[in-house]
Length: 80
Image 1 (spheres, rainbow, N blue to C red):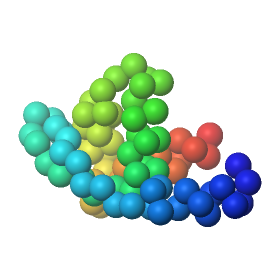
Image 2: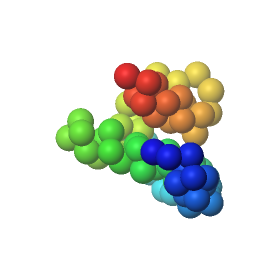
Image 3: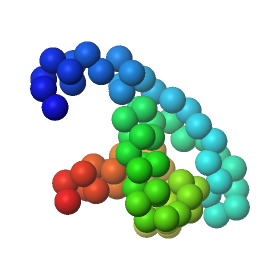
């Protein structure tokens, strides 16, 4: 992706969006930038699971905040 198109997409991709998810049967809200929500949905689809199932899996292994854990998970997925 060219640098110009990355810069042009920043307003949409960096916008923070709060969404409701169900983690281990409990509804909670998570705030993430759109780029992270987009990739989280892609990971879930590739793994043939729901976003809620994936977030529950991430939640089980986290130490800090859920939002941070999801960002790190997505970043690690992109590094592979």
